Image (tube, rainbow, N blue to C red; front, side, top):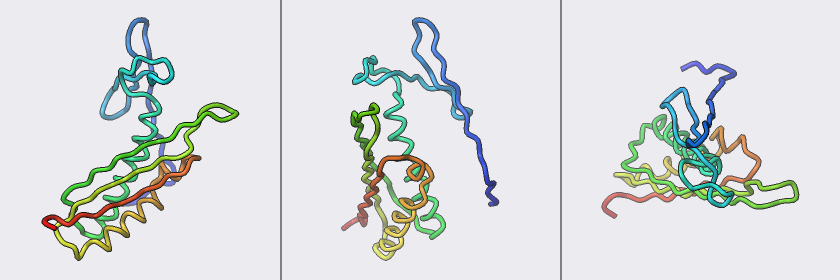
Length: 147
């Protein structure tokens, strides 16, 4: 697969009177959005803070799977929990840290070392986490099925 040097990703955000705001992506479509409760929102729909943390979490997962597929390793399951720390600073709120804790399950222990390597490569090459100003910590726990 040949990669281009530049890609453009677009979305549209809109809100009409007495209706929830929404973001429209080229794929899969549209999603309801709103402000976080902490910032006066109703808590309905996705908020930018959740989407920011989810973008990092999902990019790390996608990058991890890119490398495990390259290594020809089957992952039985992958689950990750992400949390982002938002702090008020002199110039306003900003994320200072995002922690992602992933747990993967394998059939065979012989692949554990390569899976750990895939995790390190995901942390190094995830384009979203490389693009943000805050620190991103990715921890990978490996479980062997039946152990």
